[in-house]
Image 1: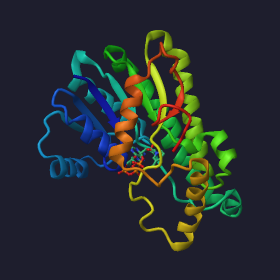
Image 2 (image 1 turned 90 degrees about the vertical axis):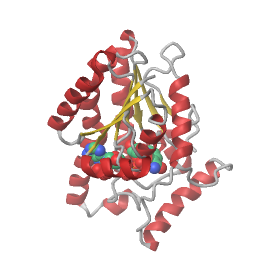
Image 3 (image 1 turned 180 degrees about the vertical axis):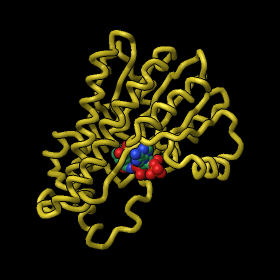
Image 4 (image 1 turned 120 degrees about the horizontal axis):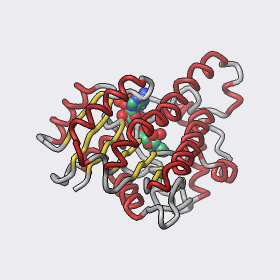
Length: 272
Ligand SMILES: NC(=O)c1ccc[n+]([C@@H]2O[C@H](COP(=O)([O-])OP(=O)(O)OC[C@H]3O[C@@H](n4cnc5c(N)ncnc54)[C@H](OP(=O)(O)O)[C@@H]3O)[C@@H](O)[C@H]2O)c1
């Protein structure tokens, strides 16, 4: 039995983490979300009564809410602490998603505001989350902190496939990877594994409302991935992704050299 804290369980990959991890009645799963009432309703409707699930409010752009969520978690878990912190929540902004850097040239205010929110959510918010939860992770047995990153934060993939879309999002995930490595540098000696894992390309319905022009921009990106990985058949489901990511974090250990690493759902540097 393990205690998990997972951020961003309201939908997408995060909801699937919540679903799979709480299937085992012996696990205790605490989900952090921005809209607690809506998520509790969704959990009740789609997962039924799961007494091992607790939903707490926690917004990565609001330090006080994260601090409160940590205190509430401590009350729930008591001396067991937290085994796994899964930092899944993240902002995938729209403003930079569909075009190359030059498309941002005349959108100064939009870029500055969008980048500030993206970095607060994907980088500094995660730093605060990790610092707040380290005392609970120290009490846990597994002692694993998993950041859900993205292969688009990999410089080699970007250069090899000439991925020109999503520059600010990609930069935020590259920055997250470094933050994870910094935590490893400090906490590896205390036996805490900090690890960045990319979930693969996962269908979560994000681009359902994109215009044909925007879809064209994205198809260029997906087409480049197909030449990088000829086996690539398109996005995987949240179920497939979460199974793969869980298997990667189960195998990963400090002893095997995974401290601070950035790897994919396949356990290596193959991103799709
Ligand atoms: N899907 C993919 O192909 C893919 C690929 C690589 C990496 N990822 C990463 O995987 C993770 C999950 O993404 P997803 O595809 O499942 O996206 P999603 O469906 O958009 O879910 C994102 C989650 O993050 C939460 N979130 C956003 N901003 C937040 C904030 N300020 N504070 C707290 N929670 C916040 C959202 O909550 P709300 O409901 O309140 O908005 C939602 O629960 C992200 O870190 C993403 O970068 C996804």
